[in-house]
Amino acid sequence: MNFAHKFKLVFKDKNLRNRIFFVLASLIVFRALASIPIPGVDIARLNEFFSNSQFLGLLNMFSGGGLSSLSIVMLGVSPYITASIIMQLMTMMIPKLKEMYHEEGEAGKKKFSQYSRLLTIPLALIQGFGFLRLLQSQGAVDILGNFELFTNIMVITAGSVLLMWIGELISEYGIGNGVSLLIFAGIVSGLPTSLSQLYFSFEMSQLPMLLGFLIVSIAIVYAIVVVTEAERPIPINYAKRVRGSKVYGGVSTYLPLRVNQAGVIPIIFAMSILLFPQMILNFLVNSSNEIVKNVSDFMLGIMSNSWVYAVMYFLLVFFFTYFYTAITFDPDAISQNLQKSGAFIPGVRPGEKTSEYLGKVLTRITLVGAIFLGIIAVLPLILQAFTGIAALAIGGTALLIVVSVVLDLVKKIDAQVSMREY
Image (cartoon, rainbow, N blue to C red; front, top):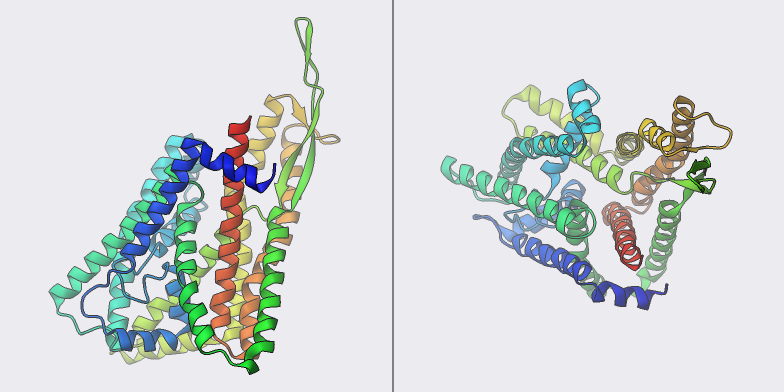
């Protein structure tokens, strides 16, 4: 089926068309909210502050571009992602939460999601307060009284919760992962500004460097596509069963295990974990307590080192690739389903042995995916260390998220089209 035919099918199907329009409408609402600033913002001082901080540049990208204008959705989906990470980690420590998530079916997952939403509110309050205090100390925001500060924190928290709700609506009534699409929209919205700045500041002496960056970017995009699409097929045979005068089964197929089972989620999780401590430390470094100030300054110095940051980023991406894969893919459940349907892997006994085999294969191929994601994530940081261009670090992470989100979206649209064809 060629692209033109698929495109025609997408817009001929009313349900699929409505889903796509719902996503577009939601993203327009998000961009409109991101342009509404909170009161008392010094735009010139704010732009200067952001241009000198790689940390805030990454956080602005992560918030969907709302932080650079101190909009009412300046925190983006960061509190919700942090809450989701905390809840997922708690499943490893609290058996009841693990049972709720894995064994209570759809009702358990809905209750689990509700806990994540509730946890988002205190995290948004903490992050909102920390940011406003940090920006006040830098002169980017006017000094606020207690009532004005409280009002702004409430507005920022409400904006973060609203964005979380929009993301969940996109996941339910649209196509693709709502949270990832919101981050994607924030990244893409900054492209016209970046291209116009590049155009007006372009000099012929920069041409070799720009061509080099373009070649590296194309190579990264190609590598992301190849690894994301890569699969390890596990052969599956179905036993023959006789019912009355008919014979069922006896066919062979395969179970596809993706090399990068977790998609873009490890990158988003790793960024969230890296940015949250930096935000707290940036706030504490202005503390009146000398000990707290010195400790925060020391920790910020360590985290500001590009090589230390790159190592931490790589390890977090590596860890979350395995972590998210372990949560989303359950070899025991797959083994039981195969056994119930009379299917088996040639040369492997059904039941526990099948589960062990699937776990072993998944661990090996996830190693490749985790190393690849980690290298792609830190490669721009390494290039930045050699070239001294800070924008590379932001651009590389943004490229990784954009390509992964687009691939995921295309696959989900393709699945919807194929389902309607059949």
